[in-house]
Length: 110
Image (cartoon, rainbow, N blue to C red; front, side):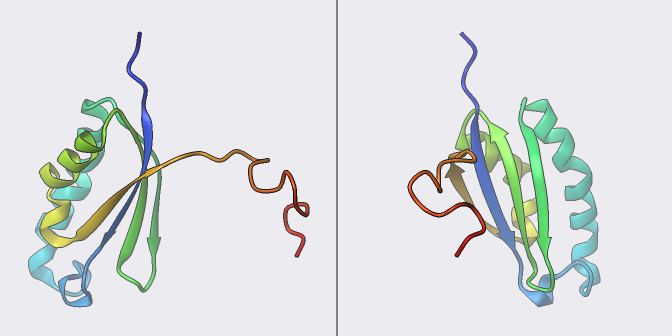
């Protein structure tokens, strides 16, 4: 039987002073991370479901499907994300379209 994958929401952020856009000393590691991360995700059989950057908050969210939280943490560390960012990994559950509104108003109704 195939091992079940889980969904994780990864939140990473950095201080404005360590932004690769404004601090040239962080640009090489950022470039290396952005090149290595997708390859490392694929090598571990993980799926990157989404990536979002919140401007100008210096914060990003990654939606990852993986076998374990350890695999996610390993990729974040080995890809050097954690050399220029702080982060958290949250296990997540998909709720489905009808989960929130089975006993209440229709979606979008206040």
